[in-house]
Figure 1 (tube, helix red, strand yellow):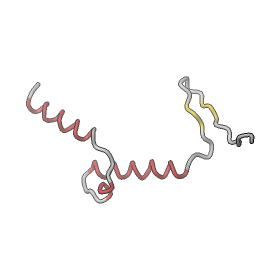
Figure 2 (cartoon, one colour):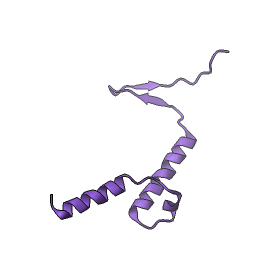
Figure 3 (cartoon, helix red, strand yellow):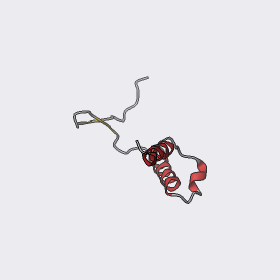
Figure 4 (cartoon, one colour):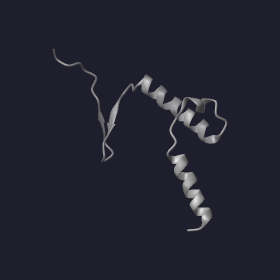
Length: 72
């Protein structure tokens, strides 16, 4: 493997191992911006929840999650 490819692999591993940090909102590089945007989207989706939640079935058929309480 050439020296150029080795350096590229090291850089890729550094990027792949990176996770969101609060300072990413103020970061000016593409990776920080992407992580901040993804974090915001996931946070919004988590807080909002789903109106009609389903479980994705392996065979492509969605299984509806019923909204009913437990019997007391």
